[in-house]
Length: 201
Image 1 (tube, rainbow, N blue to C red):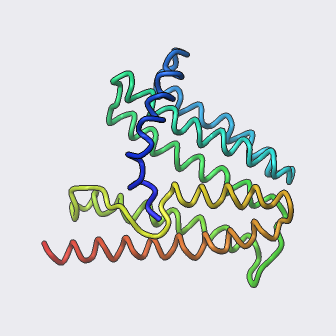
Image 2 (tube, one colour):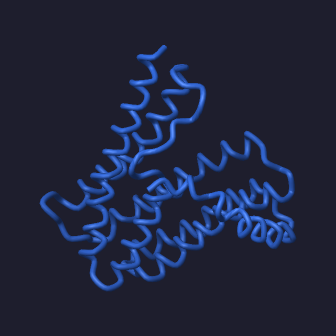
């Protein structure tokens, strides 16, 4: 799916967002941390099985995640520290939403629903760690990208699943199973990329 390859097509929209929100006076890092606010509200609604509201605040979280980078670019405040904080906050956001899924009382599907949630969480974790470990060990000099299910794709599909859960919780359960399978396939794909690069050294 690789949504990151299509980002250049949204540069004009991103610049407009950055110009508009930079007038509010918050720094890019403050916008980054602010993503926790709608995320925690989304968590509250997930726990209450109020899926439509949870989806709304999850969407707001994703929008603010766009705002911080846009503000950084238009104000010339793009920094390595900001990129680091953004990456860390991204993991907190995804982790908080996944944590909320544990309290939704989803139906079981072949395995207990919480087992699928863990498999999904582990797949997302390993997708990120396979990339970070490759750089830490000096196997690659640039970030490993690619695979079926990067973070942006995972969150987009999860958002759709939460939205559909408003009609029937089984839809969200099917989405979690799909995410569990594809996120682990993505992790294996990235491990394979690293192994191939490692053999060339």
